[in-house]
Image 1: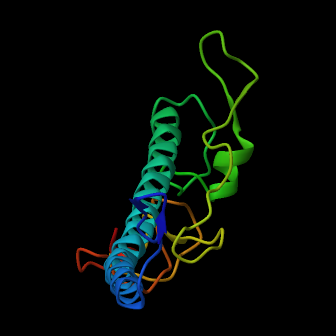
Image 2: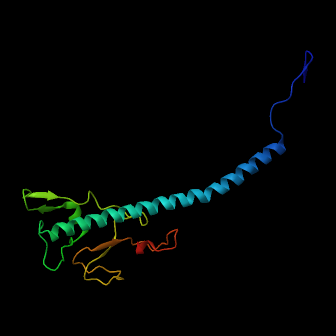
Image 3: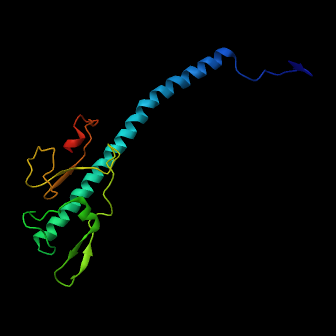
Length: 159
């Protein structure tokens, strides 16, 4: 196109340039999809580890107070909480200057990020270490009920 002695180039892309640009975008997006998928899984695994650590620390705090005889425990419970709800509801703490104070160990029972439910596997002191059923007397340990395998090859239920 010529106008008063100047040549103007036409703007736009040819069909070949458009196909090449679309192909490059397709290749880049197909490379990003697996990375995004693994990122989501890693985040859920991180959340699971944090939730398990939080609940185990709450169980340990309860056990420490029971060993110091600052809270009442049932005979045969070995000083562990009877269930996870007890950690949320709290218990009356006695002792020096804190008589009648109610102490909570958890704000709420967290949701298992792998199963999507507020349902955890529990172990009591009386259970076998490899047991998958809870004896019901006390809560010594918690684990995920997910049967899935982590990115590192271990089972979520073994964490």
